[in-house]
Image 1 (cartoon, helix red, strand yellow):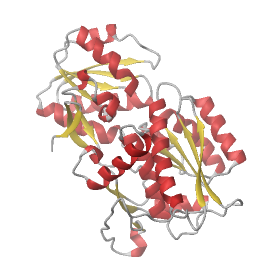
Image 2 (image 1 turned 30 degrees about the vertical axis):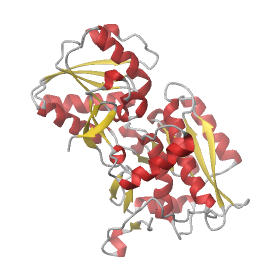
Image 3 (image 1 turned 180 degrees about the horizontal axis):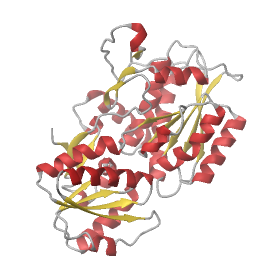
Length: 373
């Protein structure tokens, strides 16, 4: 991977760069007393969203292992300091404080909007970059200048989904969504977009602890289409209830339907979504990384693991040959850059804190992601 080209305002015209999976660059380092470069990771490794934290962790570890096997960075190994947020605010804060006290890493990575929102004030207090993965709440990157995100938000997912539903001539939409910052951000954008189109929408929110969807689906079963904004662990029960109530409408969902555990469900066949390009077998870079991942972990690759892998590679390319400090990392991230990664080309403008990769209209067909265009 060639070094990411950056600093548009001061370094002239940015040229396109090529990337292949077999090329590796050296990672960044801050002066470390024990000769290691430490990254703090507060990940949800237990609870309803544990699959997210586990996949992100494994992707990051694979990228770090590749770098360390090639001699590390400036002859120093990278060390990932992991603690479980347990999908809760208090545990996340405790995990951050524990890592900060004992290790003082050069930056932090977290998963989920709720965890990122809880850690944002701590990142500001300690003047350290917090990079949110698999976190869609719009307010995450609005809290302070130390928080960044590498993941699409509702603003990225909703317009193409509405476009798909419009092409299918849907006028009466139902929406089942999580009653949290994640779900509400989707519902509000869908409601606004749907109102402009002159169509109707009926929403039903549910708590994470809810396991019985009979009544909520009963109130939505007469809609022409149903948009599901839920966590991966909820789909099986929801699909089963839709089948019991003989729902005949079109089903659409958020990008997590593309994960193997969800798209392999028989009831997921035919569901519409928007998905990153990593599931396209013709995208060679993603295919090579996927083959490595599946050989190492003996499980299917998905975009959670890809985001963990790619954030390490992104930071590596951006910070190569730089004198790195906590403030230096923030400055470089804010400078703007082009990055050709596992999700395709990222074009981050100066000052942007949301690093969102491209999404493409798709449908689940026989357990696989089929891109519509």
